[in-house]
Image (cartoon, rainbow over all chains, first blue to last red; front, side):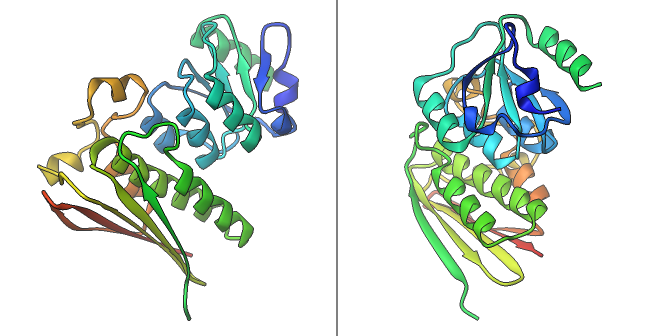
Length: 109
Length: 139
């Protein structure tokens, strides 16, 4: 599945359009950046409620395919710029991290 | 053979530009067609070291050396040093302030993450004048 296949009225792209052809092979849910750095697999969709610019850096360093920001949280403006520059798709979702993970897992099956 | 080197200053508490040196280092590794698993390990080790300088130090610098068969990452800061190294190496132990933890940092995994991703990691010194960490990744 590609990042663009996730996009719908529920999962809306807010930044990083240049990366929507990336393959997604896994889902990882966590809000602790160091934990993500040590555990996430390359090619994952990362589900979080963190919205600051360092989230983009973590995604770049670990080859994450896209970031799903849950609970209707808004991405910081400088994080949006960085996501566009680094081609890291950031997708907004209004539900909880759990709901996002369930829906993504069904899509990946 | 002389390595390709890169040097960056890292400011304390500057979260908006934190990670820039690791990001530029990573782009260089990709440009040099270094294998992707090596790039990932080197990027994570570098980013954790850089974030440690941002979060815990009075400021410092990152130095990178890229050889034909290895990468050397040096993170050096101007203090205040690591009080208890044994505790700092333990996963989950953190001295990060509350506002940093709210950003999702300070999970107490920085040093263990660096050690896991590098082939060798040496903490050359860590007194009140600063900390110097040297990591090597072979390929």
